[in-house]
Length: 355
Ligand SMILES: C=C(O[C@@H]1C=C(C(=O)O)C=C[C@H]1O)C(=O)O
Image 1 (cartoon, helix red, strand yellow):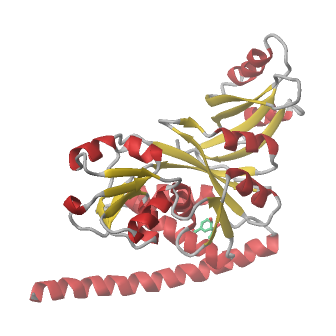
Image 2 (tube, protein in one colour):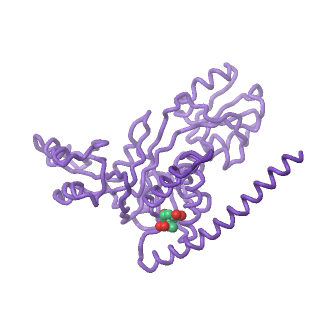
Image 3 (cartoon, protein in one colour):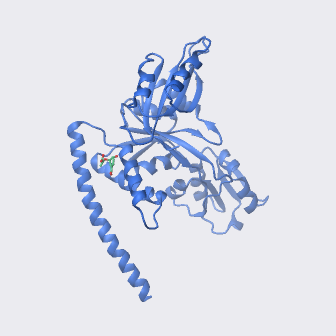
């Protein structure tokens, strides 16, 4: 017991030092915020945050790897940004959704969050400037693209600030501490599908599976109904104070959703690894797409994604192409492709490449 006391005393001393240093850091952050305010420049600088993480990773000699450094420092950055200027973040709801979890991973516990009922509302709120940032899913590597997000990128005047890949991990949460007492499990159809092996291993035929519209609704129901449980996101369980019995119950460990952070009129500076997204509305003629793609190949630009969506113009079968490629708007070859094709190309943003 004496040893435990000594060790905890050491931890307390480190915490005191950390707090002092963090307070000193926040004083400097505040000064940066005032400078940005005078220059009317942007608060959120994902490329600067990435370079800090890169530098700390190379310096770290102890137990902290990149993931741990990121987890700690993303929260510090989010608190810093709130000290510079508190900003609102809207996301595809409901509260406790995976998009909420993605938003919190970048904007931290101190930001003001607004859950919205659909993807169009997120774009509307960002486009009108009512809310500074919006978070929406764009694709899942098991289920494919989110068509509504691509359609809204075509329709609305917003920019991509950052991409955010997040593993989709399900939690099994219940007020019951013994799985034998569970008679009903609530969740969304897709979550039941993705946790099949866990359910087969732990539950027999006597259990009822009830599909609801969201995993956060499932968590709420599990809280209200005895002998029940929910398969939900970590954040939903936390939100409703529902104890987690098992974490990471999904069958596939490779289930990743890519989210986008959106803002109006946003220009990121270059980092050492960027990606650019554009929309191209190409002439409806033979070779139109090939000729356009040729421009990338001639300049040695590596394409990472190309996806077509109907332009939805009456009596026409024209298509928009969403194209992602390596590089930043401030790289000469990228700028050439974009600027030499006015009318055809809409620039959506250059941002730190994370996947
Ligand atoms: C302090 C700044 O503003 C924000 C906060 C950062 C931080 O806490 O280090 C880094 C980049 C910005 O998103 C800055 O631009 O340096």
